[in-house]
Length: 191
Ligand SMILES: CC(C)(COP(=O)(O)OP(=O)(O)OC[C@H]1O[C@@H](n2cnc3c(N)ncnc32)[C@H](O)[C@@H]1OP(=O)(O)O)[C@@H](O)C(=O)NCCC(=O)NCCS
Image 1 (cartoon, rainbow, N blue to C red):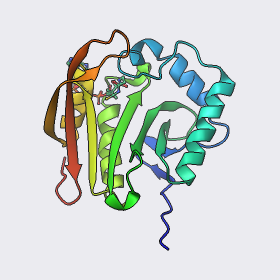
Image 2: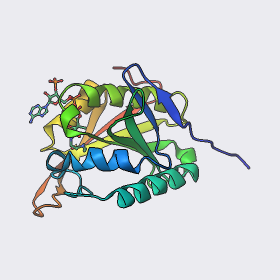
Image 3: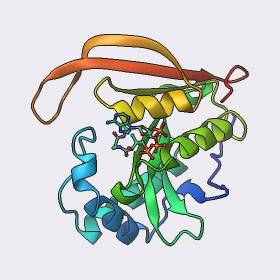
Image 4: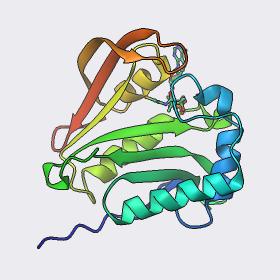
């Protein structure tokens, strides 16, 4: 039997990426509640006001699923881990881990967005994903209307490989747009 123990944390020059742990709920609540307007267009899960207990319950579920290799939701923390700057993750969506394929998702808190952080985090996730993790293909997808998201993928060296017409359905009003797919491959990716 082979075991996979997911890397738990990486400390980068200006932020720390790590699995959520028990007690992170208050940080998650503060980051999301201060970012609702910024998140609501493209993040289906965004809500105007979450309570600490709800957020704590989410962070515990993230932790549990991480330890079980079910889904790898990762917090983007300030280097000293006192503030949550956003969230990311490797999401393999029920595909066997041995296939080495995952989607990277991301949100950055409103008061840190548009300052280059998303691009830096994506580059670190790709670097980490192709070294300490066993991913061989990492992909990113977004609505064609999500200019910042597509821009971040391109700036991080991901290659646009598909445009799915009318595939993206807005959770706000049901309107349809195209979905863009980007990917990076181990051994080929470079910024
Ligand atoms: C998408 C997101 C993760 C990007 O993170 P970020 O830290 O804001 O990204 P960066 O600052 O590294 O880069 C954003 C780039 O998009 C550009 N940009 C942002 N909005 C733009 C717009 N409306 N039109 C054109 N360019 C835009 C910025 O100028 C910047 O490019 P530059 O560095 O060349 O100036 C973040 O904005 C976010 O959390 N958005 C809401 C949630 C979301 O949509 N997540 C992605 C789902 S696929």
